[in-house]
Image (cartoon, rainbow, N blue to C red; front, side, top):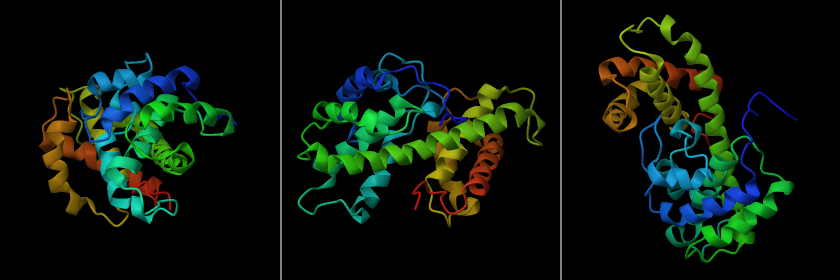
Length: 247
């Protein structure tokens, strides 16, 4: 069924997964970094399979996803004790998120999985996981990334038309300045535990803004209002799942 998110399906998985695989092995150690609202450097171009104009807002932050799965993978029922994160499961999670970046709004289903599976041989690097063991981890990461995409889409649609009506709006700045702040708030709320409060997170968010802001001209004292606006938008829209865990 086509839904409101089905807006860009320009890259066939059969050709794109090879590009994903080539870039993924180098990403496991957190080598993808980049501000919200800008490209993630050369790696983004490889992941995009020729669509290098996509911004971070159209993807997930691989470093943050890597940290999330490192802290949570042992709770997943498919994890086997003979395998570890850095060598084995990390590449599978990174691959799943990278495939979602590439496929954008195409679902993970039986018709796509053969191509996704074929890309694992390139993406796995030194991972000891055969596809049947890597599959669940990759799909977990894919589905978590999918929720992140949808959160970005929700806040982009909301704030792109309403940002100038906010009481903190300053006409000296355009949406290109505010958008990274909204996306930063979206991303950080989505990746914090459900019980997190803005008041408790604000200090850390302030420290991260200089990296996240990209080309935005907003200093934190002004940006924080937009970040907080998006943070609470996500919180209201996804009660009980604001950490992106989906469970």
